[in-house]
Image 1 (cartoon, rainbow, N blue to C red):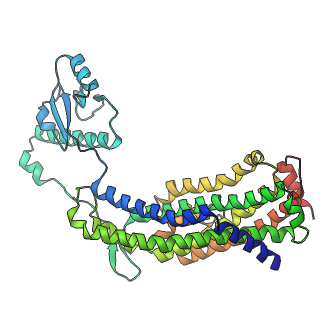
Image 2 (cartoon, one colour):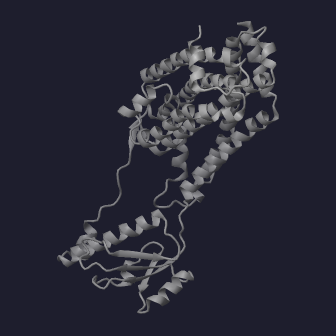
Image 3 (tube, helix red, strand yellow):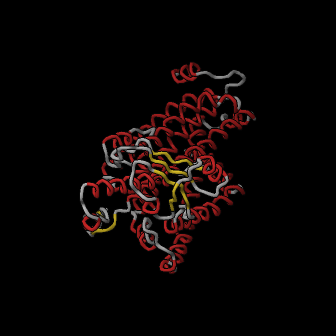
Length: 426
């Protein structure tokens, strides 16, 4: 135990005194605060292009004047007889585009085309498509004898507003988008931490092996104690940096929240955007204590699991180029966790697949971090963490078998067959 503590202390003190570590510890919260401020700014002001756009329009089989089609920033004028002149003006950016609808039956708009000098964004195309369908629908209703005034009376506005019951039993906004964003940000941080700090363990083992220092070290320290000391020492470095980030981020985000709250009334509110005070209150209502607890547990569990594998890889290889053949199988589960987070967790955070991959130890650090803001049952969190911890214990035992042999092997490039043989050795 004393040997593990000596290695842990050496790994910890060496890294926290590093200039890069100190700079990033203070710089990262600033970057987080800038991200937070940027998210609020773009959510309130918006990133859409509101410049005026003039588009040529012709629909020979549709009795609709071009000026009746105007909406938002789009103005439509009758198309010219000479198509080449229109294309030249579009190419020179004098005009935004040319919309032509050649459908005889406007029940199905399958011959409508929009020619532009540059690509229209997905949002712009969607807006234009929705507007065309609405106008076509209104036109067909009027053709059927339904008046304009009747159409206005039957127009439906607004939509469903999502609410939820919080931990105090009060009804509040659900903030689903914010929860997804925060959860995914936590998953991203865990992903980065696992690779950054796990790679530290791997490089440390490789450096000591390459420099032949390990031959001296193992004469007084057992290989298992050496590996575990490295893993725990670097884990303590990661936690130190994380808690420093938490303290500094809270201070910076608190200042930004106050600044945005005081200027909330002066920022324009677009029809499709949330007011600033709603976004700020959304952040403040998130279960940050639960999120941080889950983050720390699954950062530690995920890091300990993967760093034991990284330590075994570092002890087995002789140079950086040999690492690639072993890194792909290690990194694939984490990448797969991101795929699950995007395709399953965002759609159904408490669904069957989300629960299954929250229990698989190779993907649970990512998936559970994304699910954390969505009130995951405590039994699932504890169960997932226990499985993750037990898998770590098994992986440490397995990696130690590779480590104790591989750390003293030189010259030969290891293969999967060699690793299996080292594991089977008593």
